[in-house]
Image 1 (cartoon, rainbow, N blue to C red):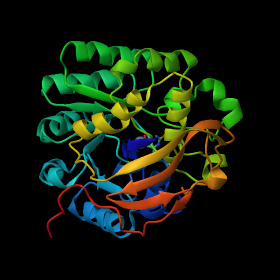
Image 2 (image 1 turned 180 degrees about the horizontal axis):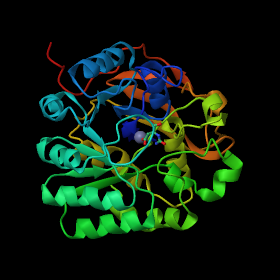
Image 3 (image 1 turned 30 degrees about the vertical axis):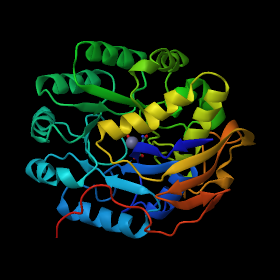
Length: 354
Ligand code: NCD
Ligand code: ZN
C-alpha cells in the first residue's frame, strides 16, 4: 500500500550543541525510517536558534547532513522581535514558549507574548507551547491579534474542549497531539520507568487520553515532538523531559488503523494534508511511503536510527510497517536500510541571503 510521505511539524534535532543525543544525520535517518519525508526542526538547541547567525549555522548543519526535507524554526526571545519578523520567510515557523520545558526559550514577560503575536507576519506560522491556563492565553492572542496560532502538543481534556469552543467561535487556532498523548498515559509510567517517563507536557491521565480520541475531529495534526535524550540522561539524577518518536509514530497509527480506532484517511489528513496547509509547505513530487499494513512485528530501540538509544515503546507489538520510502523519485529507505546520502534533504524555505 502506498501513502504520501509524512510531514512532522514538531521535531528536536539537537544540533547544534546536543549532538550526543541526535544530529541532523541520525535524526533525519530516523525520520525516513518512520515514513517522514519532511519535518520542521524546533529551535531549543544550544545555542537556541533566535537570530540570523544561529539560523545560518543550524541551516548549514542541516544542508550537509539531512536525509529528508526540512525547515528550521526560529525561537521567540525577549530580544529578537525585529530580527524575528525579518527572518520569517526563511524559517518553518516562530516557536514561542509560554511554559517551561527543555532549553532556555521560555518567555516570562507578557509584553513579549503580545509583541511577537502582533509582529510575526500573519501569513507565517506561529507555534505556541502553552499548557493549561497559558493555553487560554495563547488562544486569546490568536483572537485579539486576529492571526493564526498553532497550539503544540495538546494533552488535557480541558485543553481540547477549550480549543473546540474556540474553533466554533471562529478563532483561528489549530492544534497537534503527540503519539505519546494518544497511546500512553500515567498508567504506563511504572513500566516505562519514572525518569524515562519525563516529558512535557507530562503523560496525562487515561481520562485525558480518552478526551483526545473523543475529540479527534478537533485535532488538526499528529506531531511526534521527537525529543531525544540519551538513555543515560533519562536514567540519571535529573532526567530531561522528552521521548523519541519519529520511528514509532507511523507504526502506532497503523496499528490503530488495524484495530479500527483510526482510518488511513484520519492519519493522512493529520500527518500530510493539514500540516502542509497550516505550515504552508510545498508538495513533494514523486514522494511516497510503501507500507505493509498487515505485517506484525516487535518495536525495539535496538533497531532504530535515533542516537538516543531507547524508546518508551520497547517490545510493543505493531501491526503495519514501512517497507520503503521514495523521496523525489529516489528510493531513500528500503527494508530497514537508509539508501540516501547525508545532504539529500532540502530546505523547503528560500535560502537565507548572505
Ligand atoms: C522537548 C525537548 O526535549 O526539547 N521536551 C519535551 O518533553 N517535549 C521540549 C519541548 O518540546 O517541550
Ligand atoms: Zn517539542
